[in-house]
Image 1 (cartoon, helix red, strand yellow):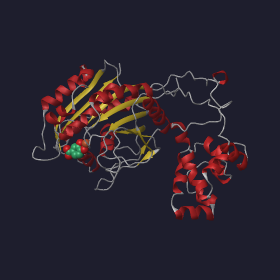
Image 2 (cartoon, rainbow, N blue to C red):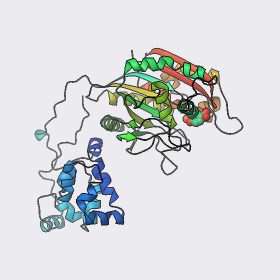
Image 3 (tube, rainbow, N blue to C red):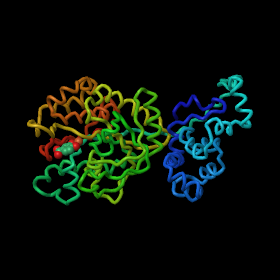
Image 4 (cartoon, rainbow, N blue to C red):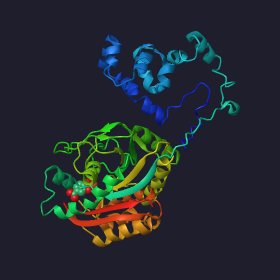
Length: 417
Ligand code: DHB
Ligand code: FE
């Protein structure tokens, strides 16, 4: 079942949705580059050569060279981005828009003077709608959920070959089962919930929920140089589909096409997949703000999980999708209370996550920070994962270990039985 697109048969109209934004990504990024005077000059000096610097399709380049705005729009361009082209040509919105109507500039200007285009014949006509055929395929499925802490020191231990040292050995032993399990499961895509730790997002921009719909993400340089791990390959088509579905369901995601991914995302990948040349599946990064108070509530996170499941399972391609919730458990990285570990809280949290996630989702933020430390609030991301699974799940693996750096490590593998 594809997404409902009730706007596709409005006469003479294309809506710029997540699919169009994906198709038009490089065209629109090229347009944005024209906001710099030096780039406009280079474009004017050699349009074709300048556009060859952008990963646009031949069709998109030709549409720009021809200044064919209808074609640019059909190829994923959006009018506000395209405006950078006609503004660089010193052409007004009215003159550029007129070129798309089959009228001359004068006729169009005259029509506007006379009160604008009449809606007659231009409104949606239910008798003329053509419903697109929906392909009958199995569709994507969320088969399993994983939770794990994502401590940077774990990444450093892996990268520096220290996993067999006495401090680290008991921790990595807890992931032996997980590596075998995932090698058998072979997910096609992991939807990876994590928090960015002031790496991709500074205080310039703090999205509460974001989804990565880019093609590729680099490991962030958090100060020690980027981790020596493979680039993360995204799944732009599924990400765009998820974004559209959950936004329509009331979760106003921020859509991110370009960002680096920090330890919150790469450490769980290393724990589960080890040190491959390339990550064995596609990954959709899903950053959640838990840095700037207030983060989203447990209720909201749990409900988001349900919306994410609906979104994934309305995608027509046959894909094995896992959802991972990272961060937690007890940790406090600041002040005189740093190093707080509350084993009773952590284990109760896991018990309740398994048996009564709905009840657990009512836990207020203040309980997390009072009981498990200021950074223990990362645990709300586990509720997103849990919401995306069945009410009853099969527990395949449960692991808890103290310490890793300042933190308690918790790890679960749950299958949708
Ligand atoms: C630590 C844990 C984290 O989750 C994190 O994001 C940064 C540091 C730590 O215990 O060192
Ligand atoms: Fe963290």
